Image 1 (cartoon, rainbow, N blue to C red):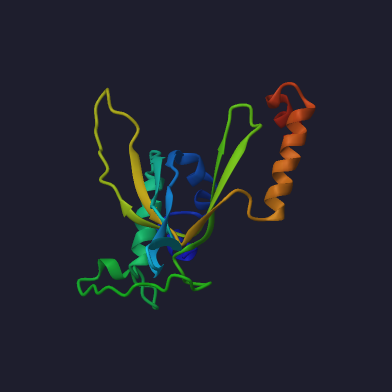
Image 2: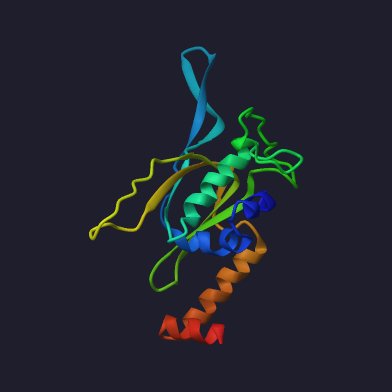
Length: 201
C-alpha cells in the first residue's frame, strides 16, 4: 500500500511520523459484550457473553498547506477500493471504472494496518495510557469545511476508523520496558523537561 500512497504524493515519512503529529483529537472507542439468554433451568434465566463489540475510532487531524492529512486518508480509502490496476494505472480515473476491492490482510497489498498505537499521557509524563488497534483502516471521512478570508482557521478533518480489535495497555515486553524506562528517568529528575532533554542528548 505504501507504494501506492507514494505514487499519489503521500510519503512514508508522513505516514510514520507527521500524521501522528497532525492528529489533535481522538475519541477513544467504547466496547460492550453481546450476550445471549439461556433458560436451561426452570424459573432461571442466565446471560452469557459471546462476542465483544467495538465502536468505531474517531480521529481528527489538522491539514497543512499541502493538505497532506486529507490526501493521506483519501488515497488510503482509494486504495481500499482498488484504486490501481496490476499495470499501475489509476483505476479511479478511468471512464470504465469498476470496483475491485483489495484484499484486506495480504502482507504485500493489504489495506489494513497491522497495529496503530494511541498514547494518552499527562503533562508530567508520569502516567501513560496506551491503546493498540489491530487491523485498522479508514471507514468514513467526514465532510470538510474549507473557508477563506481574514478570519479563516486551519482546515480540520475527522475520520472514522474500523478495526478488528483493540488492546488497552502494553501488548509487548518492549512497550512495558520503554514505559518502565521512561518512568525511571522521570523519577530521577525533579523537572520532567530536563529529563527528556538529557535523554535526547
